[in-house]
Image 1 (cartoon, rainbow, N blue to C red):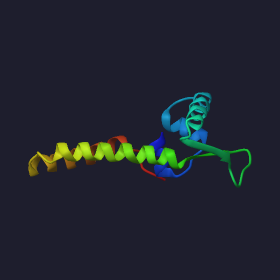
Image 2 (image 1 turned 135 degrees about the horizontal axis):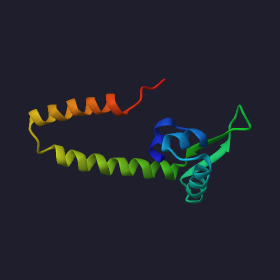
Image 3 (image 1 turned 90 degrees about the vertical axis):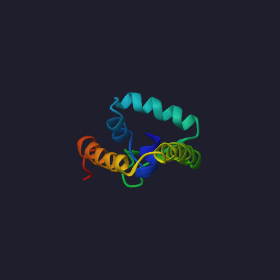
Length: 106
């Protein structure tokens, strides 16, 4: 969810609940814990006071990006040892997984 917020820049609790496939009350509790940990910030939506918008704090953004950098370094180290043919197979598999699993953006 933190990585989603990093990409989206901001979201609403309802959208995050849908993204994580949890109920809104569960997401409210999760956001409360993340806010207490200093990773997210909840604030009133600037155009609709009934809505809450959720953004990452600097600390939350740093945590997401550090985790992403660690995973990228690990993956690079694993891919360095494979052949060109294996790389091509992975590219094709990745394209298939994206078409199959990732819904198109509006």
